Length: 243
Image (cartoon, rainbow, N blue to C red; front, side):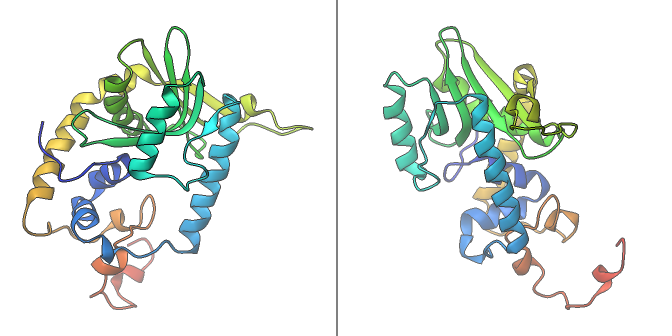
């Protein structure tokens, strides 16, 4: 396995599939990233709200991140301490591989007698392939090292677009939950291939050349958009409809 300069989390990993330049800048020049705009903040807020509602699929857990106030090494340490207790359900638990090169946070973790259950909650209304599968696949890569005493089962929960609320909110009907364990296993080879490519990019002494394009704004605006587009006039061919 190739060497990663510092722990790689799933969001830079997924973004790097679209643009290795974004990955390189994130690791070597993070100060060039722009703060999220109003639209992005709104999307984050929506995602967070859906995530909080999704916790009701497995209620009674503890939020190890303390509402996103605990993160990084502190969250990793807090997770390990929490796993030594009798608590069975955790939200935002953080894990890393033995080599310390890969990290992830888990929306929902439930420890059962015969298995460990992980649920990734999405605010979308359908499964997005391959993004969602690579998402849970990246988590599986890390978690299979941590939970090797009993089977690890991965679920993906996304909003049911046909759900109609009546009196009270029915969370089990609000979400469509599917078992993606086998699919997460199936993409391990692809994930390793990407990791080898990204490792070589990160160890390079120069920023990779990547032309501006759809990856700058889809599926969301890149944090390095302003930097990469700094030489493009305010009005250019990019303002022409459908370009």
